[in-house]
Image (cartoon, rainbow, N blue to C red; front, side, top):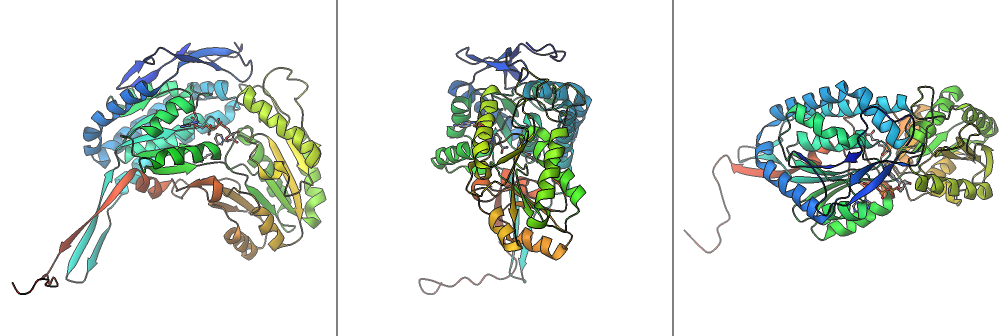
Length: 496
Ligand SMILES: NC(=O)C1=CN([C@@H]2O[C@H](COP(=O)(O)OP(=O)(O)OC[C@H]3O[C@@H](n4cnc5c(N)ncnc54)[C@H](O)[C@@H]3O)[C@@H](O)[C@H]2O)C=CC1
Ligand SMILES: O=C(O)/C=C/C=C(\O)C(=O)O
């Protein structure tokens, strides 16, 4: 076990079902490792169908009372959850950083964002009104919004607790009860939910957590007939598989999938700010980020200078132990993922020109560390231009004019985020409109506004979450029409 293990590290990570910690029905567990020592530090319960069945049953029995509670009362509980997260910021960040390899300073930021998610959705549902429509003096129609039932939430390993909170908060605010299946590589921070939720007064059964392998616990949740909705964040391949499985029950789906987000830098851009943003955008969170700007397209007159300076900056990024406050890039989550990223680096050596990184830092002989890596002159058909690497690796390519920039930006199957840098705002908006992506930032890095729709197009996902979009997703709308005046129904079948 790593010598830097945080205080209070559990040796056993258990399910949370109906308000109580639980082992799997068959007693199965799996080993959980940290990305610095790559040795097991705990065993986690490996859930299967019987565990998911129990969790769904608990969520179903908690649903009537929770959904009937009313938005304001649920918002009060959400605010207490936010308080509980904030009170544990340090422990939460230490757990997250230890388990996932995220630098501790960034893990603290993610813990704060998790609390913000709960405060934000508490405010959203308190402010929520319902729509009404009037047709002159004849008819009045109003929308009744009801929580959809038991939500199935399946989350990834890249910023585990924050992304769990991004689904839990709107689901709970909307009146759903839920079953969460955290990612198996990073179950540690989810082990803090039970004490946070219990302290906040969340009734037993409202939130249930089943740990386990995706193909077993996750699949059982997707297949369960009493779970009408799945919110999934993860890889595009798994998303496609879940969509196919969900078709059987016609489930409501939200899919936040992979990305290969372009950063388009025009020659008139503010070079220093654009550089800062590109470096942060692809190397923060270890590059394990769906919205990472992992393809940088630079207008020809600026291309050589930009590539050279990006390489220089990448070489100066501090790679180090996740627990060190000076660390900017920590350890990649798991040896399997590390090997996959290294494979891409080998592929990139043949496809582009390696100008920075590509190797393990000399001062870190153990652990899943990679020096931030920059490939220049990457052609658009290269695998490192097309495929999501999900690590600290960036592909850089030149373009000659605006239409070529848009063509290159759109030349992958993905369409999650895009970034445009130019001092010509008209052009910024034109490019933003032409780029095929769910989100575009102009002269800005990935600054989030929780009121805005979050999600992608093409292979990057289906649906939007964030703000009112999340409430729409976790509720069903029913329209009630009522006649206001005299009713003149066309008469069939003769006179009265
Ligand atoms: N936020 C994002 O955009 C993410 C993208 N990825 C991409 O995916 C690649 C592979 O990562 P993986 O860990 O394999 O991601 P994944 O998509 O397999 O895992 C995400 C979640 O889905 C669950 N899952 C897996 N198979 C399932 C199934 N059949 N039914 C229900 N749930 C299932 C997993 O247990 C985990 O909780 C990464 O290298 C990266 O490129 C991965 C995680 C997050
Ligand atoms: O900011 C959000 O709400 C979501 C961010 C998600 C990612 O960065 C990710 O999945 O990598």
